[in-house]
Image 1: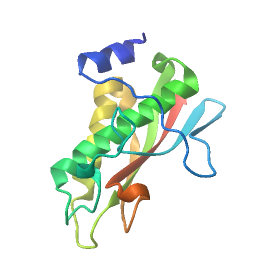
Image 2: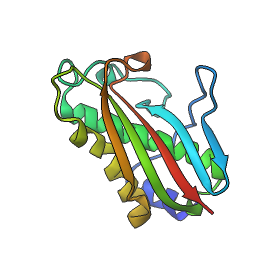
Image 3: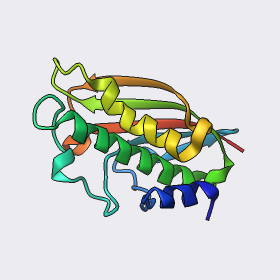
Image 4: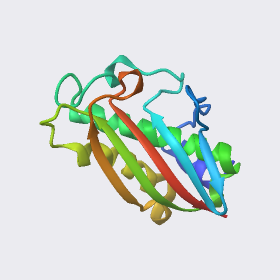
Length: 156
């Protein structure tokens, strides 16, 4: 078990089985020392989307639940990253996260919701988890998920 996984375990986090693609794409692409991971939804350990994580921020989903959902997305990113490189200790840094928040047009709290994913990366990877980021509000996400997060990582 990698040091990163031990740290996650100490945080009470188990990495799920990486989600399989549901359309014509691959879960990650490795090119040179970069791994680009396709958007991950806020699926739980059981691979399912909880009812609480369905819907729009600013309507049926609270900012606190949205932040929790973003954290789940980040956990799923790490599960895909482990599948891509085998050992999370090979991570040099999280280069970028892109967050998509299913929100009503007037919802202005996108950044704090996305902090759920950003905070998890820093907690899990330390300074290697500090990253560039984009966060956008969107009209809809697959399965009516409230959050989706994609990532790019530099690896050894």
